[in-house]
Structures are given as structure tokens and as C-alpha cells.
Image (tube, rainbow, N blue to C red; front, side):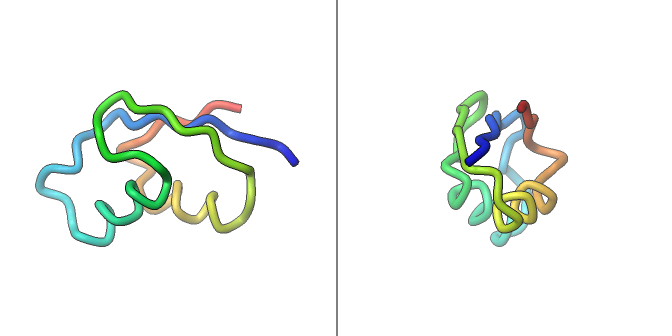
Length: 58
């Protein structure tokens, strides 16, 4: 299965609780942390929710 690389570029400070929880669910919670995830519709939905705080490669 294909994988995508997600890097956190924005701070979770002053964000809603659900956006913070989404970052944790993606394996991110600190600036410039990178996580490699399988490319599924569920992961794509999570990325879309916090698209202003992450960078996607792959």
C-alpha cells in the first residue's frame, strides 16, 4: 500500500481540541515532527482537517 509523509509545520497552540487530537492521531504533536502513514481515506480526512498545520509529501 502507498505511504505518505506528513510533517507538522504549524503550532497547535490556540487551536481547538479536536485539531490537537487529530495531530496526535497522525503521530504528530511537536513542530517539525514527521510521520509516515498509509494513504487511506481516513488519513486523508485527518490531514484535510489540519491542512493549515501540516505539509504532505508523496
